Image 1 (cartoon, rainbow, N blue to C red):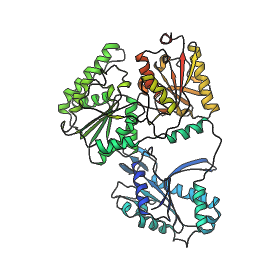
Image 2 (cartoon, rainbow, N blue to C red):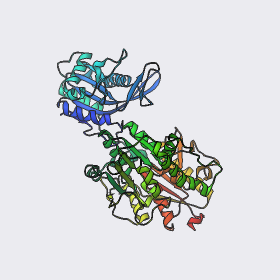
Image 3 (tube, rainbow, N blue to C red):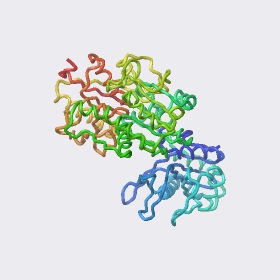
Length: 556
């Protein structure tokens, strides 16, 4: 087996192709090979900095250095546009990526390891498409001899040396000390004095995404055609739903993923695309619109001037009713439907959802939920009303938050003894008490200055979660805070932006540092206020700050 660095693929790795190639290289190559997974690099020239990442870097004392870029999913190339695509999304040219990594990383070893320069071993590049069987065309720099397809993955012990030998014949052999010096140069060990930004990186790396408990669930429960999964905030329900979708898709099922929140559906769709999982992902009302309009009916949502009960009546009742009417003329049916944040769904929505299954009695339906995150008042009793009977499978291990944040969450909802798996302790949530709106704004300013300027935390790792819409918040009149700009956005901030989102819009999402604004004092909050605070606070992976306004009616 090859010497793999690191010795396993991070569960956060979004690409299924990287998981597959890691496994195949490890199994096929002998212990003379050293394989680095996910090797980022930064070069500089007269144009400035050029950055890249090598998916896999293979070293061998005789055959030399091979850079491999791997891609999964439905990949295509448009010669007219000179552009690569995954589905409809533009992606970087994998051949250029692999070639640039080859030249740069060989240069790093040539400059930094004297024995490497003297021996001058071969160096080359390749591109892996582990889920493809045939490439019907090519361009001048795309020699099919350096392409690794599905069948090539079964004989990598032959193909890797063959590709490198095509670039240049093997050398006699590198001295073992030179080989180790090359490995140490690419994977050095050192220690720095850290500020908060460095602490966040360290703590984030130690948070698990998939626990043994979750893995046991998948192996023991995915064969059931109807499954309920209940888990506290941070227990990994969303990631487990995505992993379940991936396993069902790879088994040949047509899969639909549903949730209530628009930003959450967008994030799930992107994660699925990155992993090469071809599933349909919708928030519920987007699905309603799609079914209704494809069925030839009109989807007349309320106008911008509509308010209150008229809006609720349409989205809660009329839209799903129209969907149910249109289903007879809607052609799409699914082998499996996975619903995340199921507590957000009204009970009467489940009937039209079930009608989208190919076989209501045999097709797969899984609902992931947390009754303590019901912000819409749809839970009566211990859990919402679902079309699945029997006891749910319960997830009890917190996979998202530090122990300090999880401790606060337990106090808010009256649960204790949360289970962990190698979690960092983290810092206790910080409460900042202010007198009025001016105090709220000043507290936000000081916090952002401290985090970004003093502690060197990237603004993209910070989100402000409030109870009010942005246009009604204390930040709306002047969103400029020093050099930063606060924007109403749940995801993907631009440089210099800090996001603001309501607890309702940010539900299901997460980030490293969360600042809560407008929430009740935890010590005096009533049940509904504590529920909102629980949902909002659980979005924070590593650091949590509460700006509590003492003159607010909820805090009197």
